[in-house]
Image (tube, rainbow, N blue to C red; front, side, top):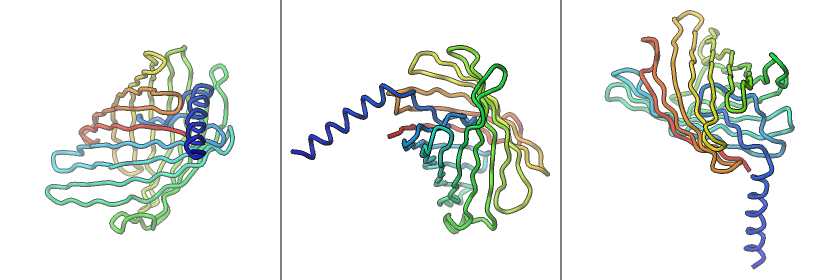
Length: 247
């Protein structure tokens, strides 16, 4: 009887907590990461499934990708990324766990006038923490500066700049994202986005995507997004669905 009573109290406390803290802010579904930090002492999970057609011969699906986050304090969060992938090239298939990434997000500045709310995100991929087929030769670092302007009560402008390494060579791939978010209601939001990747010695690829989010409560959010490649060397298109929650 005591166990049931404790479970009921825990359930009620979670409802009260969800009503008193700011709504959850997630780094998905767009490619633009948010500068927001997970509240101190809270654990946040952001997960989703992506179905991507690279070209007429190959497809790549992530089933799923999961970002695990923990708020250390109001300025710092710890992060861990796990991703299971399924690839098909012609009639050949392979699947497995990609290298696990560990890292952090740290707040750099609050929004003030023309100065955007700014944080830095950094990860490092662990070469051996992966399925045999996906192990890399070297550690794979990545970083990006994430910035956000509040244009009105309903509209925001966000952008990221950074670079990543694939774990096989010393050549970086530079990253950019630019997105505009619009709050249709307090629960329903939408965005449009331009993003791209520019390898040091190859042509950059550019992409466009859009999506929607729905806030079930302050601690639980659903998302749906889709994107297309703008340049010939970008993936043809993708569809993603997911959810985020925190406790």
